[in-house]
Amino acid sequence: MSPAPVNIVLSFEDARRVIEEQAALVQASGSECVDLLAADGRVLFEPVVADRHLPPFPRSTRDGYAVCSADLSQVPATLEVIGEIRAGEKLDKIPLNIARGQAASIMTGAPVAAAADAVVMVEYSSLHGRQVEINRSVVTGENIVACGAEARAGSRLLDRGVRLNAAALALATSVGKSTLQVYKRPRVAVLTTGDEIVDVDATPGPTQIRNSNSYSLATQVRRAGGEAVLLPVAPDELIELRRLIEEGLKLDLLLMTGGVSMGRYDLVEQVLSEMHAEFFFTGAKIQPGRPVVFGRAAGSGGERPETYFFGLPGNPVSTMVTFELFARPMLEALGGQAPHQLTFLHARLKSEIRMKTGLKRFLPAFVSGEFDKAEVELVAWQGSGDIAATARANCYIVIPADRECILAGEWVAVMKSDS
Ligand code: AMP
Ligand code: MG
Image (cartoon, rainbow, N blue to C red; front, side):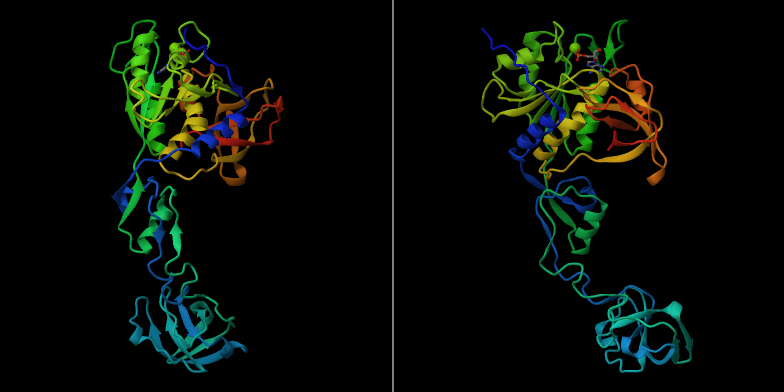
């Protein structure tokens, strides 16, 4: 007799906690070296350390005059200009001994002469031959970033687990890293199930549906830092479904879609139970995506450590939402990324929403307007199978499980749908 499928339905928060706990346990696999320009979106393996102080010299942040601030305690004051300091100026060309009553003309990004303790902006000066009249006083250190104030030589600038973006790559470049050691991308099996599903190039029969989930998932996997491997569509039939699940369990993570609801031909949980999988949950109190399944199983050979799997509901919007909420953090952990929270923003609700309580909802919506003018509105949809509505949306409005009514004008949390 095969073990009966379990039934573990968690609140959204508990399901997220389970994901966090499991994500903290995973081992990311291996690293590789990539060029700086190919490193966007990759996850740092080897921390980046400052090879010298940043800035490496006291840097002027303005075009103006390097001065002794004490000379400007009374303004206007007239100073003698003894030289010019350009950005990139060689050290032996910098007028070092600016005496009291003297100034050096200086450019943004140039090293400030040691004897000067402030830079006054050119806007507050007028030059007459070698004499400059300054009509604004400055405090010590004004318009100068001290040597090493941004980072000390030898200090850690970027930690292991950071996902590289433009700012992180700029920082790595500033300390001379032309290549970076990053985690390998986790390989993610994507397995769609369903007798009615045909692939994009096939001509669907009148009751057949084209497989869109494998392609939305492949995109989400790539954006989350993984490499998607698309398996053939599995029929709603035990033997072939099991064969393909075993294939998928050979990779770093298995994502399945469809076959996890209550229908007679929803066989994914049955197959996994027969394989003695461990289930962490088989449902979450959310909409869309309630029947989402998360667990861990070994392939038939048992030669490989247990692989995490998700059974994502087949309705296309459910698949996308449950990937973002649950599968993405596991994939990121497998890719070495440090844990982080879901990214969201707030916007004012345009029209009132009424809901039944009990489920936390992530409903396709459209956010417009910038900053404090951000407004959001549900898109009209036919439920979680409506891909056309989702394609018109650019976010999900997040509705807490205990809210029956949200009034127009209230600020609501919004999760971006394409990040
Ligand atoms: P299921 O979760 O298997 O009950 O499927 C729920 C709904 O999603 C059904 O209407 C399926 O036809 C549809 N569906 C399942 N898998 C896919 C897929 N890969 N692409 C598009 N629609 C799908
Ligand atoms: Mg199905």
